[in-house]
Length: 573
Ligand code: FES
Image 1: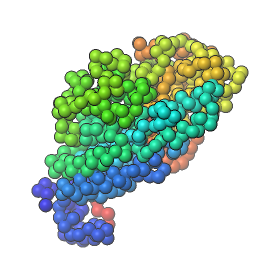
Image 2: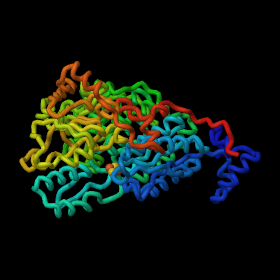
Image 3: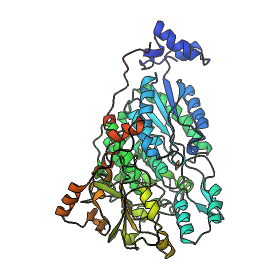
Image 4: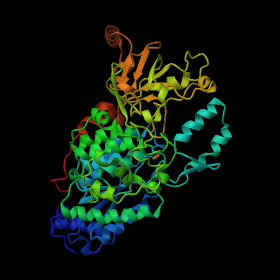
């Protein structure tokens, strides 16, 4: 069938001249007959399969599902590769490369003659990177996430990705678990392709993006290897062709209301602190006015409803079988913008209308929440004038209001060298401070903010302490951990000025973080502060260090904010 609406791809494949010959002829090397290029919508499938990224190792099969749906709807699917960021595999940290991946995706979408795009992937940085890139072009786009792994199993109990690594590791250091037992859990934790099955960053973002309308319903929770994920991919293929034919753009979905729904979903599911950075960066690309303070005033009063690790007990399979994101939407009701319409063509009101909560233990009813206020808290104060983040749901309630003596580590190497020193002057009431792990300082803002506790305190039974840094934390991690202090230490933020013995006050109820020194003392220390020269002077690292923004702006590159649209005016030859 010939599409009645002029398509972007027609400027490449529709021309009956030398240029059209070149574009079509070389594509025919793949065995495409003439009628493939008779005006059908071309759908790009952004493929992030990689054997270095086990969370995406099944995506070739998922792509086949999308292709079936695109062909069936009268479109032409063409797969293209993008950088793939395996969170647990790539060093020094995947976050260093999120913006690089977004540039790869943006220029691939713009440069190739596609009319719409399906984005495949879900390991932490990949989905925000792909959406950021796609938003800077603006064509219709849909996300098909990798889906979570099957629940972890170890000696008769469920174990959760990341969450139980951190827990077991501390028990080994405390002497309450043998290293042999720890190693025995390894294969049982990761039993299938897919993303971490706790409410880590991947699951958080997949659920948030579903609530924002960037995927079909249940994209956030169907297990990666469940046949229903491939069926959903097939329906995504159907739907992206319809979106292209309707003239939709990504901006139709990426509205201010969508971001507000995302913040509230994050609170209700006990989502990762990393979502703060990714949504800020995505809003910057989409040109939506949305800032760090929105996380505080929109999310703070939303109850925590989903009982998943690391804030609770269950895992993503349980969440899906209980009813997934649609059931949470139904519980939250009018707290959300229910009239927001996503790429499915359905409003959240439509989705809530057919939702079921089949396990109120996993998805709590609104009147029986796990926690009355589940949102992330954005702390302000002289230690983080541009903000810091804490996740109360994953913290120890008794430490959320705390005053303690600072024990300062100047880098992650300094931390590793000294944390288990028996002579380290530290007790359970102290506040552990880590400097030099922000966007520019590390560089790349690694997930080290949940510093392991000193062995001597673990042996004494201590399991949580207040920790403060400019780093991030894995969404699977837990503890009373203050993250993303901005400005970061490396550029002379107040975190750089903390000294051993200073008193730090964390007041989560009042959203404040205070270094208890006088303004005069702060100014004197700032005047004496000596910057460290950048450790890298070439390649991507240099570009990143020179242009990355602070955490309160999403740690995107300054020149990537906004959109360049989809138009390319010059031919390739
Ligand atoms: Fe890929 Fe956790 S390591 S989602």
